[in-house]
Amino acid sequence: MLLHSKFLRILGVLAGSLLAWALVYYLIVSDNVGAQHGFWSPARIVAYVTFFLAPAITFIPISRLFHIPVYDLEAIAGWSTLLYVVAFVDPGSQPSTTVLLLFLVPLTVSLATIFTLVSYAIGYRFLRRRSQRYDFVRARREGYLIAMFGVGCLLLKLLTVLTPVNIMLLGLIIVLLEVFLLSRQPVAAS
Image (cartoon, helix red, strand yellow):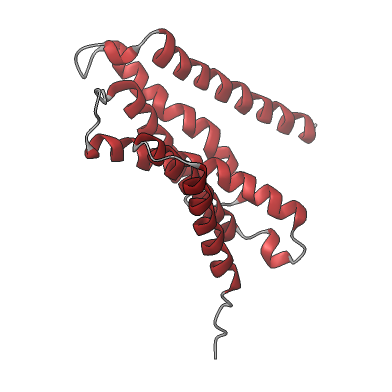
């Protein structure tokens, strides 16, 4: 009976999450809620609430399941801000530095929340030492490095300097940074 209720709870969270993200898609793509005028218009208020609830419904259970500190807050802040920027901020034909940063920073955080889970899953599966398998600091760091690589490639594309050589150099920088961070040994307490 306990297994049955746990399965129903997981199924309910999945259904709620999928419904919330479907509503996000509808509001941004189909309804174009960003075209609504007035900060407090009813459609915008629904969008604000949905942009908060979709990541909350998705990432709070993940954070609690894996006991990841502040992961839920990080994901909610990153995804909510990214959704708000995508829906309501008009970049214009030549986005300013502020608008570009307003888009790229939450994009980095949002991607990092996904890549952190991927890195943790890969580490859990393939790393042999117990301290490495359950290390969310390592997984979060790698998630952010992968996200920075992706956002760096996007930034290079926006600056019209995206070439295979630049992609390889950026990838090499990210890999060398991770190798350096992995090679550092923690200082033993005396």
